[in-house]
Image (cartoon, rainbow, N blue to C red):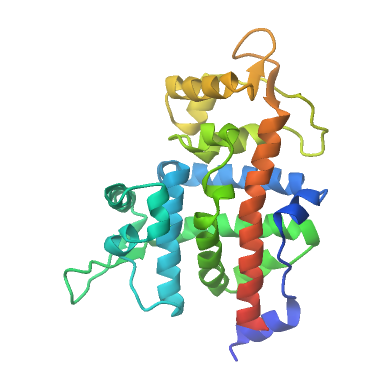
Length: 301
């Protein structure tokens, strides 16, 4: 038995898996989400171009499918390499993108150096591998969620992940496949979709909801202080016009607004947006917590 496996068997328990209902019932879940949002924003600033590109939910789903195929091949769950052809033939993705669109997304991800081609004897296959920089990003994303789940129950998921890189490889694919197939995640409420189905992706909605103190009581209008589109645009490296367009759509839905002077002080977020965001994120945490439980059972039990 490898020394790392012996160490983890002795020091870490098999972590719990959670349902959406259990997560939403936890008094610590809102705090956990706020901390996760702050860490995800930090990951964005580490590699803004690549993260911004994949933060549109449709591109995120394609990227997660690619990662799942790659990790499944790496762990021996699948003998098939990750290829663009294989990805375009993955039926569940056709709910969100055509075959040509999936191929275009992957070509762009290669431009961003997220995936690179590996040499193959069969020149028709053109297998793809995850770049070192991209693996660093997905590992940071994964560990961010481990830390948030640990906050709920005092678990040791983050410590296990940092001690054993295999946990990402085994836990990611089941979670990714679950989320790709789950309409609670891939078809979020309109209040959430207003942000996530744009080039801003999830970055801005993470930012907005994280501004509301997690321990505060929700009201019809949850005030978070000042919000200026120009500042937000500079923070996320997009045009002010694009930010204003997205914010105006959310405002038309009644999910954000300003009391008094627009684009100044007294910015508020609706309780509906915060609750929809929390329920949507709970679906992701459910999938991750259950896949981590299963991976730990497989690796260490």
